[in-house]
Image: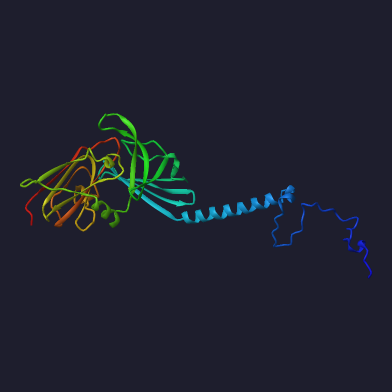
Length: 313
């Protein structure tokens, strides 16, 4: 048997002019991915490959999050003694744009709208108004352009800091105003009606008073105070709650509109009234829902009084 010489099993030597390839180098065909063992990573091939993969995953995740946030629109409002304030905004990724509307008080002042843009970082909005012109919310003043989105009883609310007069101390102080979702739809009505307190008159009485000082969630502006009162069509209903904004829902669930101003054949309407609300002639027979909200932390309402007069039909 002939035995081949060992030199026939040797690999051919590269040509003298061929460049030498280090152990950490490899030839990769187009479309292939090669990850070298750790010992061969001295030149950084493995580290660079892993970094590239992580960067790609991060970009995909960020892109998905931004796509989910695109097109989101939100609306929040607050009823103040001087009128309603409405914030409408749209979120596109981390960018925010919207308007802050100060509704007028009828004949004295009309509505004014202010545009803003900004960034959304977590739950905080950092906004800037066009031309640096802040909304005129006199006699209060907006003191912060960092607004907070928060959860309140399953709903999303917007909190903005203002400086206003404390009606108890007579001094000006900073406080957070809570802007609630604009939609007063069935979900909001049903939620309020479920936890509302029922108003009952003593025999022979046409009025009843209920305390507000002990309602911690209401005083902290985390939720409104709600009451149910039965009344008949054509009866008169008067609600007095100093330091509160008053809203009334009809037995069919629709909000009642108060005549805010009337003159020379013209009328303006409002969905709420400050301190005192009167309906001279109720339009329906049934259970009315009365909602009280604090316009600012600086006030502390003590009680609400309900008065129903006129013959039941």
